[in-house]
Image (cartoon, one colour):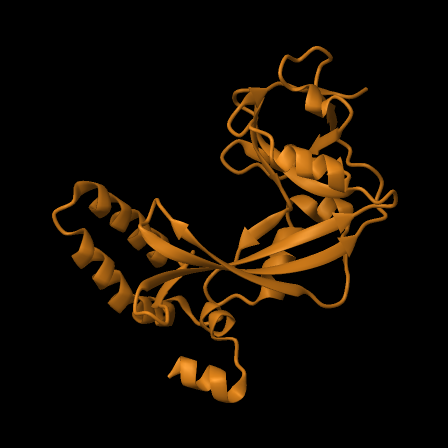
Length: 241
């Protein structure tokens, strides 16, 4: 039915389902979820993957449908934000700061973003994102957004995942964040950060004693960080005086 509506009325069924209440999305996902469960029967590894997928579906982080060949398709809706400042550099997330441990665990560099929740539109997800850690920068969102769709095999779940990504752009004229950080000179293995401005907002938005660490980067620096083999590594930083 949704595919018929989509073809007749040019409705984006992925975003339509994403905006549905969670109980409706769950009902739509159940046939595909049962198919994954049946396929995993008797296989401990596949059953573990099924339970993780089931949890994600029930939490509203994704929904399940089928592709044109009848195979199960996991659909994840996301938003990203390219936030630029006066000098053309833009904001990327490079790690998670732990108050308890006093260290940063690096993640692969990426634009600030979020998975869309059940019943949520892209603009609502964007307001949720900019209303938290990025609120200190007072982002001014530009008009329109670009939508990207890509599919990739999800080895951890044993199904194909379709990522529907809505990309927003924004600018900021706010001064540098108050909690600017630097990596100590000579920090072995982290020379890539020596000339990059890092900052965090741990004083305002802790989630389980963790907060995002951001960096202002050029396109070339972003490509270097995004493809560096440093995910999961840890480092310490100090406040810039």
